[in-house]
Image (cartoon, rainbow, N blue to C red; front, side, top):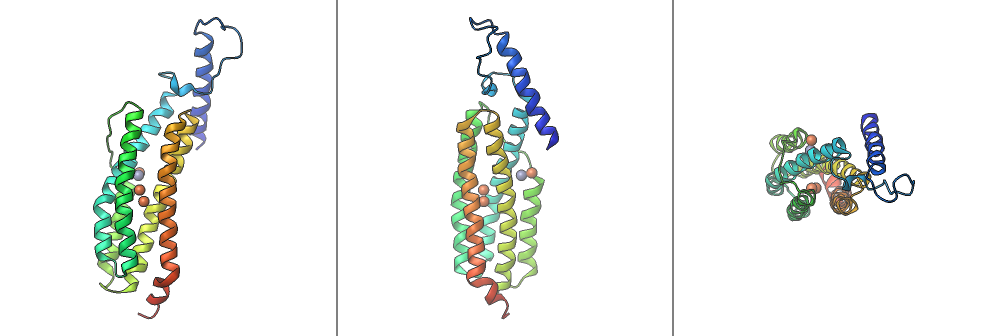
Length: 206
Ligand code: FE
Ligand code: ZN
Ligand code: FE
Ligand code: FE
């Protein structure tokens, strides 16, 4: 965290340096706007790079989820939970398209890089399926727990990306990340509601 802050601060410092040497009629005056340093090529390069690497990570993660969610839907006992996984699969496809848009905005080709965290989280979901009995509400409790761990990872990622895009002065990109962030929060909330409404209570009688 402290490291990121330092980078951000030094990036903003170098931006004002380049502005004052840009040779415009205003050279020497202090009215130059130095907030949008990301629009100047080469400025804040390290932070930009961190942003791009995080995008590759979550791009891989979302694509990985495309394979995990149908398995989770198939394994779920209650129709309500099955349905929520199927719906989130559709939402996930849109999120992948949104990430591709984001890569394009940055003039980069959409590319994934293995996310060890998501790989681990989906492995946890797999072992819950293995360790619980088919057709039980206990399995659903476990699946909800696994799915919420996934959503929380995504919430942390998109929350950070949205904030970072803002810091980099790219509001359009921040908005895009914010849209996905809202969807992940909604998915998390829906899982909580499903657990509270029936599943946890029904599982206690098994
Ligand atoms: Fe997602
Ligand atoms: Zn990740
Ligand atoms: Fe990761
Ligand atoms: Fe999600």
